Amino acid sequence: MKNVTDPFLSLGYWPSAGSFGFNTDILATNPINLSVVLGVLIFFGKGVLSDLLDNRKQRILKTIRNSEELRGGALEQLEKARARLRKVEMEADQFRVNGYSEIEREKLNLLNSTSKTLEQLENYKNETIHFEQQRVINQVRQRVFQQALQGALGTLNSCLNNELHLRTISTNIGMFGTMKEITD
Image 1 (spheres, helix red, strand yellow):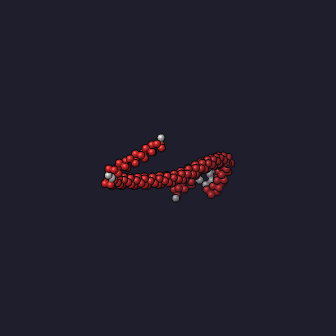
Image 2 (cartoon, one colour):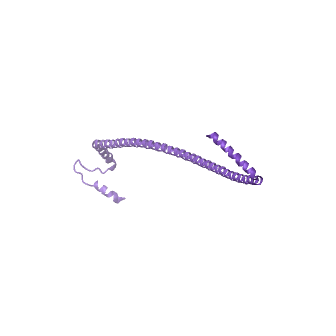
Image 3 (spheres, rainbow, N blue to C red):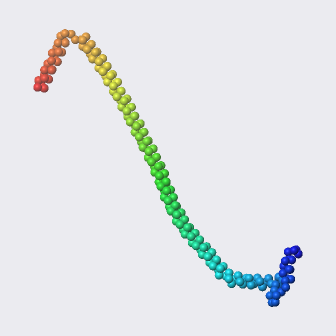
């Protein structure tokens, strides 16, 4: 420790020149030096420090104003984005509802179309059955008529003799002649 304080102690051994000299008593000279240094700093540094603080204050205020403006712009953009989002959501809901409505409408159209097609097929089937019944009935009638005609011809041929045959022909010719006179 002695080595650290030696340079300071050697200052005290300098010869004094008149009224000027070094005071080696550190405790007595330190508060005076500090008060002088502080006084000089306050006197000269007051303006510089106040200018620095004013500049810093202005920069902070400017930054706050810019931040407020940016915040306002961001809020405005946020509201626009929310409005666009609401619009898009409404359009999506409308598309969804229209899509469901369109699906239901197509479903009903398909069911109606299928029902009509089935009804037409049923009508065609019934018409075909009716046509086939009529055709079969007509065939049966023709066969019955042919058989009845053959039976009648057979009966007539077996019952008729020449004289009866001539008399029937004469009667029929007479009837045709009467009918001809009536029509003329």
